[in-house]
Length: 449
Image 1 (cartoon, rainbow, N blue to C red):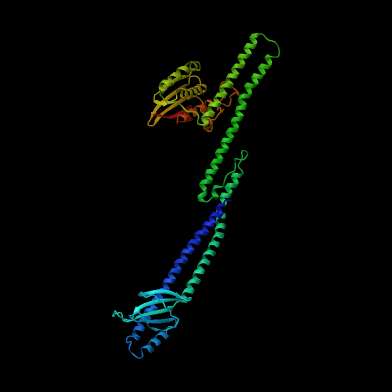
Image 2 (cartoon, one colour):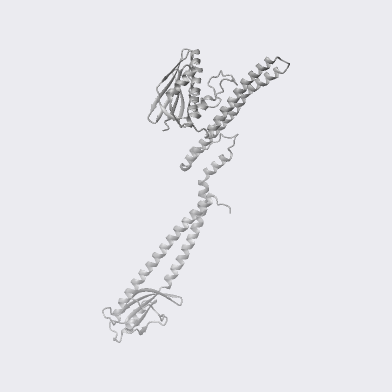
């Protein structure tokens, strides 16, 4: 079965609500009208009862029947039956009075041969237990016809109201859902080649403004991710093109003529260096791919970050001495984490700091205890980084140094991206700050205990 559209559902819902409300109002009006007629009939019969009792106050009077006929002649649709205390009928004002009538006191309604009557039973002498019984019958057929016509009118009104509401509701729903169709049109036009379409948020109703904002934000994220993916693919090609070209050229040159065994050994050693760099690049890319898919799960073991930092500073000490850079460490702290992963992250930051610290400069590692974890900072002196470049430092294959050599076998631009993945795997955050000739990488890690 074909599913109803949202506009059709809203139109049917409007029609159903209108029909229910109209029907409820019509039933209330019908009940109120019926109760009003009953009240009028009760007042009329009560008034006639008083006149009949006055006319029949003396049953033995010779002119009682004359007074009774005179009283009944004033109301053409009124009939009277007098029943003795023994239950025998003594008087019927009309031959059309039904034989069987209710005997209980008070007001009731009966139907006989297509005629409706309002019946009132009351004693002729209320103060006498053996008083004859008066039964007044009021023809209310015209009342019932009016109520029936009114009920038909109510049903007709309900039907017409529901139909009109359905049509108007369909138009209103279609007009109100126009922003959704606009969203659908924009979504249908989104593709890998067209991610720059946006919804006009200022023209959206308040109920859809937030959704439009989130939709535009989603398109922005998709566009940014696609651009990064495209740049990532191009960077991979650039990074691998130079070493592959070197391998091909070197191998072709070596094979142009017979050479001594030492030349072949030297060529193989040179090729091995390029292959090792390419293997490391592929391993780093696989490492980042695992991090992107949540497969980078660190071990949890107690660590003393001060000791771990000292071991790395001792490892980088010869390199720092050659570059005439001073390495220092301040503070300490304990947490639970993966030793090898955190060593790799800190090693990437120290290597990066040493490369960009000028002679006689300083690289300092600072560890601070925090209420919910600890903070680790790697700070180096030297030329600052343009604030516009700071958000891109952790992108893959990105190098802030414009003089970098394409396809360099030393640094592929994945170190900071790997560092960020490691920190995030531990539930922490990393950011870079650069001002007043100092560049600082700040890591915030939870304790994990």
